[in-house]
Length: 243
Image (tube, rainbow, N blue to C red; front, top):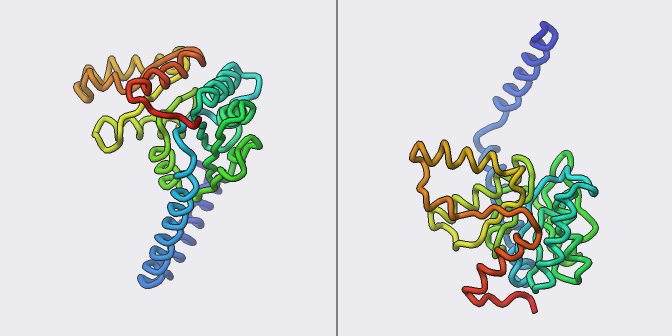
């Protein structure tokens, strides 16, 4: 770090200390109280809109995936196939893999839901979401609640930290019986294989998970396999999709 960079950091820290010192305890409590109402507002809107959509499957993956990427094309096919079977599709509402999932659902005439999040970069709504099934969130945890409450399965395409966050939270809640079990399908052996090897060779070997926990997710390589995992799972429970 140069002297100039150090001075800039010190100046920023000083300004932040000044702001926090000037904020009274009453102001802090008032701000927190209003934040609760904002959270409640997002939850109520989400519950009201999504309670009408019927059985849906969420598709996750990177917002950075380009239109000519094989995984984009695969996510589009998955969205199309799912909705042809009567399931709706839920995505994070943004570009990349999310757009592909909504696009497939849109062109098959199925339910296409978008749960967007306000971010300073990358995230903007795609044009393939049903207008009455688009929601915009400020809070990640409220958005994640909606995914879990209204999804009958997760299909996890290649993605970054956000994709891992959604996937591992679902696996954790299923593992701990805090959420009804549903299929979690990872697509792309080449992409996810190293992570799964690490889970088996390190986490399992160290005793931090049980061998049965490896059954909480499936790894596939094609759109048809991904959709088949969802359909096979729910044939056991006679779930009625959106016909």
